[in-house]
Amino acid sequence: MTIAINTRFLFADNTIDGDNFIFECFSRLAKKNPQHQFIYIFAGPFDKKHITAQNITGVIAAPPLLWQYWYNYKVPALLKKYKVNIIVNTRGICSLRTKTPQCLVVHDLSFLYTPQFLPKNQLRFFKISMPKFLLKAKNIVTLSEFSKTAIIKKYKTAEEKINTLYTGVSEIFKPVTDIVKEMMREKYTEGKAYFLTTGAINPSKKWVKFLNTFYFFQTFLTLPP
Image (cartoon, rainbow, N blue to C red; front, side):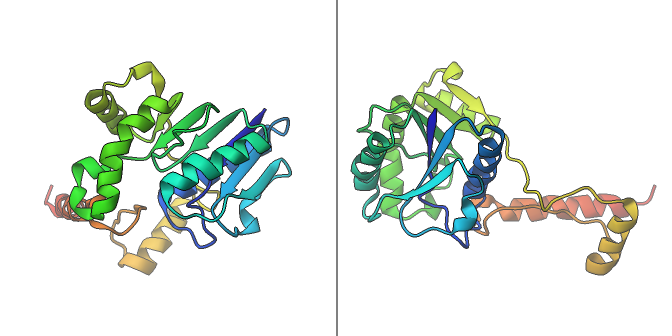
């Protein structure tokens, strides 16, 4: 089987959690399934560090231009050329012009809940196109039960069409001993307990609520028994 993965947003200096999620998933899948071929579709020159297995081929659908042109014309041409059996599309966007089965990864529906943080053209694009993308996709993957429930309620999408795949961590994260934990607390927080979280630094991630939660956590720890 030949599986294509839309890696349009995967850059050499990428720090976007959703795209790291795609990279980590398919790097592992490719290594564990050498009998299948994986095609990474980039929108421009890519870093070879993303090609982590012999059965991964990086190709470029250039120029990137407008999203709709890239998805609906450039990508379908590559799918035919490499005889792709299925394509995994990220960022909640898929092609409306290809007959190749598509798995659509919807990271979130922030355009519905925090529209003030998106440019007006992107907001309009997602509001108009999301129902079409969800209908076109053969399968849908979300990263949380919250997003899955929202898709079902908002767009009347069949529940059996949606799967929840929770995010994982890269290989740099490993369990450590209690002694190491204590050393880290002493080094970075003067021995105090702390939270560790990941994500882009933007208002849609609701960092204020996170910090309020941390404040109450700290307050609880300091209460007398």
